[in-house]
View 1 (cartoon, helix red, strand yellow):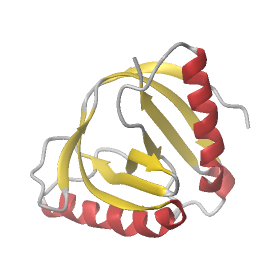
View 2 (spheres, rainbow, N blue to C red):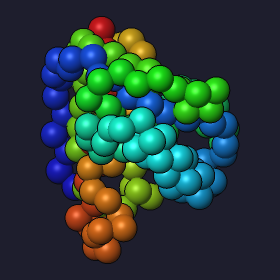
View 3 (cartoon, helix red, strand yellow):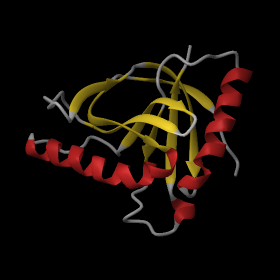
View 4 (cartoon, rainbow, N blue to C red):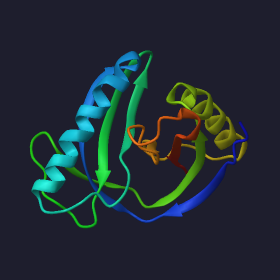
Amino acid sequence: MNLEFRTTQLQAQPYLGIRAKTTIDKLGAIMGPLFGEVYAHIQQGGQKPAGMPFSIYHSMEGDAVELECGMPVAARMDGTARVQAGELPCGTVATVTHMGPYEGLPTTWAALTVWIRSQGLEAAAAPWEVYVTDPGAEADQSKWRTDIFFPVR
């Protein structure tokens, strides 16, 4: 796969999300239901998602993962104890697009972190993945697009 790395500037983006702790092998199983909960909360609040679902990776140690499954919204919304309001940060991010099955994402992440270091950049906040392609609507995994964003300084 030919990966194209770059930096870009992002504006802050309000979102709603659910934070969870799991292990790498259970990521796929928990993400769908969490996105469903977030989507339902956004609909109950009278809005629609303002973009595709994403996962923020707050920490990864060994197989343990703390992540937040979220969806952007056009305007700030109130959360609950479980579905919390947040904001994706504004500023400089390193970014790359991964095409293909989710199983290949670790290789793309590793290449992005090597590129970040090679550019003299360092992590500034938790990174996230945006799931541009809905796997329920596209059966061909080679067409699945995931954009990765890593805040840097």
